[in-house]
Length: 454
Ligand SMILES: [Zn+2]
Image 1 (cartoon, rainbow, N blue to C red):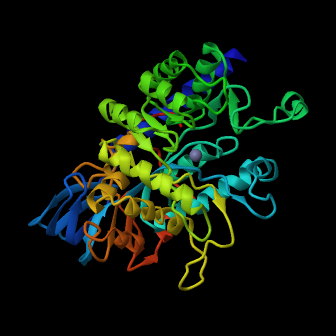
Image 2 (cartoon, helix red, strand yellow):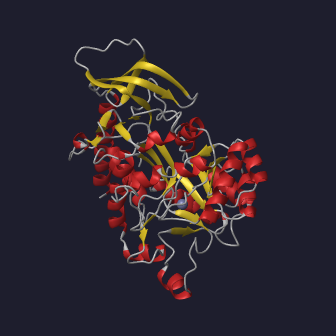
Image 3 (spheres, rainbow, N blue to C red):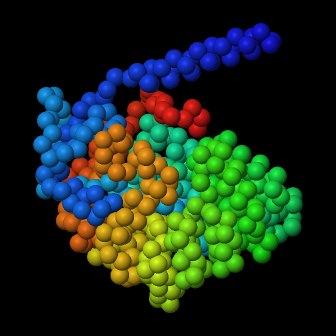
């Protein structure tokens, strides 16, 4: 038996090694040349005109005004459009949608009634809807059943279907109960908190929970800092940051109290999720320490929120911007109701429409378009910790980009009407219409480079 196992391991090793070699030596892919009428660099908030972007396979091979277009290249003329990097939602939930019917907006019921498998398929649909609206990266921070977020990442990365690059957190880690207040019988006899939350109370349990998430494919770690009065101490959070770093993960803290915010800041957390509990003094400290804010700044609409809570959200966002906190664009979208319709046409809004609609809050906070765009791109890539490989339209980066009519640097609403989307060098949307055929195939499974696990 042992001999057979050894032989199996040798064969598996050889197969894996040959796969890696094949990938490393893979032929350069087809060449595409994009003619961009205008090209935005969101880092500097500047525009250049009449640029050529060369793409070889999945990556950008050159950008400039007078690049030679090689013979045989596919030329895409976006001369009338503004090209810019893809957008980022830095805090969302792809695999949960709680609704008025049948669960009366109570996500306790959603996760009892919707299987992880069903939720994973919903996530796949959400991913395409988001890509259609120009979102090429999302941070998916929990409440995804049993790792549907990781499955979504893998499926997109392996080439089964189009979607944004997903940065999954795996299961949210918290003290007893997570964000739930279950009955004793459901908690003790049915472990009802899992898999929405992992209970981790002691240092040992925190380490174990983080390792479990990373083993199952998390690329970021989400902690409930203060979902319960017992919450996490500064030392607990520091331990989590150190442990997560071993697997290349940064930590986001869900924060809902000023005390929790202070502990997260003192521990040097990477991202604070939700802005509602933050004071001007917290903003000052976050700016000084470079802590990202994923404020999840919900606009007041016919289908969501109140005028009073909106005013509070707007004031907090404005203060964070004035204090120069590194801001990301984030939504916390995990719900749906039948009022989510286009006011003019009465058509259902897609998950992508609903996501980009959050710019209403940023406009109400009188944040300049260039800074909104930076939150939607550069700061998002940094918060997702992928800026070295994705985002900026520069040589060597993955070819993810979008194009819109108009100029988002003067009119941010231009982003609501994305005409063109490219992901990994493949065209997903052109002339305002989804063209995803090339993304669908039963093989070969793409083997992502750089990391040999999930
Ligand atoms: Zn959330």
